[in-house]
Length: 98
Image (cartoon, rainbow, N blue to C red):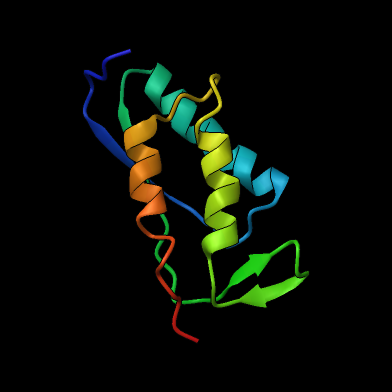
């Protein structure tokens, strides 16, 4: 669906804490806003280390969390698109200051 109501920015912590409830919360916002005709953008700006569920601890490397969220973004029911994924993958080399 082509957005006609303009851009909306959603801020969150889905990459900081890539756990089911947090991920679903922000996906619902993005999908809902898109269905209402907006062009939603997700922004996460934090200088903190990210929580890596596989490690059970915080890490300065967000690469695994980006992979987790990218897999959700490409699911058909969310259809957040290849452009969004490319932008997401472009941040995989970023290291959060510790």
